[in-house]
Length: 132
Image (tube, rainbow, N blue to C red; front, top):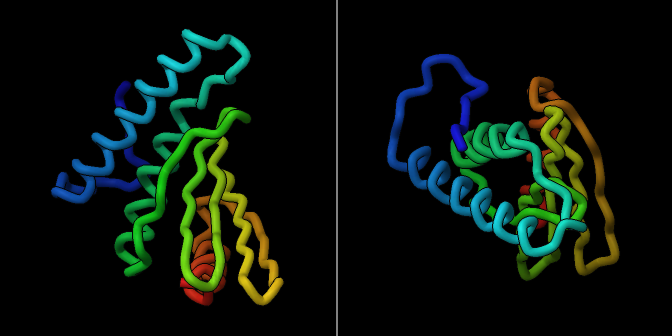
């Protein structure tokens, strides 16, 4: 698997290399699971590229790095668990980020935006910071 970048001329660094290795390992594990169970849909490679881009933005925004998993629906999910609740961002590989947050106060926040919409991403990160 060859992960591509969304951004222009981003130099290699230890964070990017670490995340890339983790995403490649997740991709390999997902492929192995698909070989064992043909009912599991493949996660598009573009979802891994979207995750690499989004994780770099998250890191640069000083937001804690989430758990990263493939879903049974054929997407990637970034998930945070805190004392105040949970939040997740789903990536299907089409540049769309779907966000859900649930707090212990029975408060729910959700939204969606394109990775290219920086204003909407900032809004999602603001909601995320409320529970972190």
